[in-house]
Image (cartoon, rainbow, N blue to C red; front, side, top):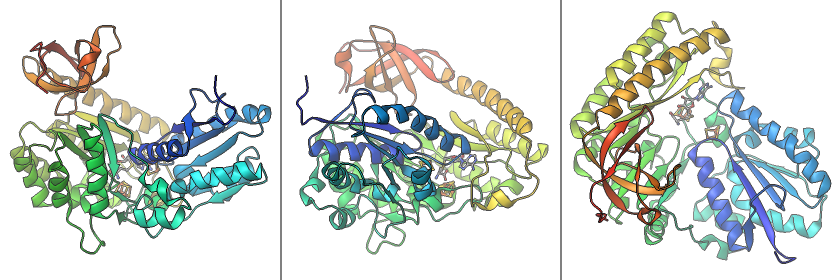
Length: 459
Ligand code: SAH
Ligand code: SF4
Ligand code: F3S
């Protein structure tokens, strides 16, 4: 039974890790004010959809979800329904106008405001519909921003929930304006959080038991640009590692901003994991140029070679877009060729999708849907075979696995190796949170399987 005063929040998150972070922080701020998390939408007093608009399909998903809560809202008028994230930023008031059962639209900058707003809304009982959008001048989660927004300064110290693996947003927005991408329009200009706050948050995560931390941002290796007195990204990484982080990763870094110091860190900083996500988007010189990515095919390949020299065990993953306007069969084959040359361990690949307001929306020579689908299928088939080969190469090796959860089968646990690959092995849930050496015995395209080497875990 729950008390009459219990308030429950249900948070649904789409899109990138920045949204995951925002949702997580919102949950923590709400918990600090006595909210509990709802197990289902039906028992929620507040439903929050944190949305993504990077491709048309992602943006459409939230509309189906909104349809579903319409009936809930009819049965329970006190329910507060909010849309946040990048669709909120894009649509703003128009989304509120079109959706009479929606109470609140809040862009990514406004998420820290929600706890205060919810209190006001519950006090005024309806008649409080609002669309809040617009870029901030401070990073949303920076102390300066929170202090200027929140009427309850004490909340700012809301503890980070104790987790084994944790994300930490170090910057927001993006100034790159790749021709296809809507992110700079929705997340605003690049803004770095002060290093002191990042280190404080990282220290709290480590104290809470985090062993694997991922620094988050759309262009993390530009960290510090435009922030007076800020360390560069390599210095920030070293400072976070010094706090005693076992495994340190970051997403997303941009090939054009990969400094020699950052490459060198892979040779010198063992806490940096053996994995790197380095989006290439295309292997064609002409398409890279049209995408305005700021590097050539050769520059990308040179970077990969330098990284592998610094850290031979590095597992690389990437993002690829197929069917960018004007992409010829020869351009596409150049992408296939690059994929073969690099030997990526994993890939996320997408059909090009026109987004409102981006440069490429106005480009000629759009590729027909069937052609995009066929190129995507060819690319994915190729990558699946490469991933399988790369994974099979681990058979017979002992990898150090950080156990994260129980496996799908009883008696099995699942974790990640230092190269971020998923490893399943037989073991008890008591191993969760430990580092276990695992002898790899079998490999699929997406995961590895093995046996724990030592009954006594190493960490
Ligand atoms: N900041 C990151 C990722 C941004 S969005 C970077 O620079 O790589 C994540 C991925 O979505 C991109 O890497 C790209 O592959 C894909 N993407 C972005 N816009 C897209 C579009 N209009 N159509 C298809 N895929 C897109
Ligand atoms: Fe989008 Fe390019 Fe910025 Fe990545 S770097 S978020 S793809 S504009
Ligand atoms: Fe999507 Fe916005 Fe992230 S568009 S990918 S949720 S920055």
